[in-house]
Amino acid sequence: MELRSGINLGGFLSQCEHTKEHYEEFITQKDLEKIAKWGFDHVRLPIDYEVFETEDAHEKPSGYERVRRVVEWAKENNLDIILDLHKAYGYDFNNAGEEANSLFKNTKLQDRFVSLWDKISKDFCVYDNVAFELLNEVVEEENATAWNELIARTVKTIRRNAPDTYIIYGGIQWNSAKTLKYLEKPVDDKILFTFHFYEPLLFTHQKAYWVKTMNREWVVSYPGTMEEYYQKSKILGDQGKTVYESGLDYIGINLIEDLVQDAIDAANNAGVRLYCGEFGVIDQAPIEDTLRWFRDVNEVFEKHDIGFAIWNYKEKDFGISGTHYESIRDDLLQFWTKKSKECRV
Image (cartoon, rainbow, N blue to C red):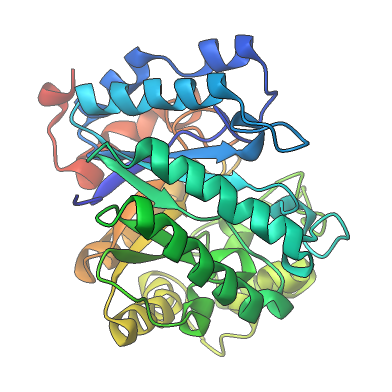
């Protein structure tokens, strides 16, 4: 399993209205065919726990069957697929710091988390094109130790069912590149460390309505000036501190490489492969600057042999298949997949 060049199917079985109508219309077999023709080798499938189980933990057979169908679509198109538990019962990255995120304080919820992965791994271990991602993003710094403990329990359970399936997990603070160093060294060689990369957030999330401190009047270019990035990133607070606490005085590919370096070092020290499960630019950013950012990130990933999945295939304000990206899509696909336009149609 290479997991070199992939794309997320966000908004399909996660961060969505969990209805049969939505599931059947949002992503179909034809979308997997298109992704394969574009030249990607895998998809990352974010899945909320609601797909697999009810609020009171009863299994939903129809949810397992739906995920199996997508796995088989992927297999038919020679695509690997990552099953990413995007939201667990008792933990949602959108609720960072709130009482609703009680997973790491409640042993019964941790038992439920491990039990869910026991069931998922039993059902999907038979597929050789599947990898498991334990949880999308753990945010709070105080959960670093508890997260390591839950990882250890969950991996041990999965390994009883799926000894050869790749398992993927990342650090705290939204899968920051800087926090992979807090993860304990994996117990086997079928583990990948993952991080998410949206830096500088000021650029990639400009005008984002869900970033409460973001001034939606700002138009941010890339590369701009470091002075502007420092000043405005401070206003973003915690979500801007990667830039304003970096101590760096340059913007562009060198900044990107320096911000990824912590993840590279952590993976090397742990003896594991490194994977970027999400990176992207909002459809509110200037389009030529978007192309420049993606090109720089891709160059860094290539240099350091980092596999990746773009966020996102469709909608969710980042959808590469949307009209906003039409003028640069061929350029993006060419350096992501190395496949000519003629081969993609």
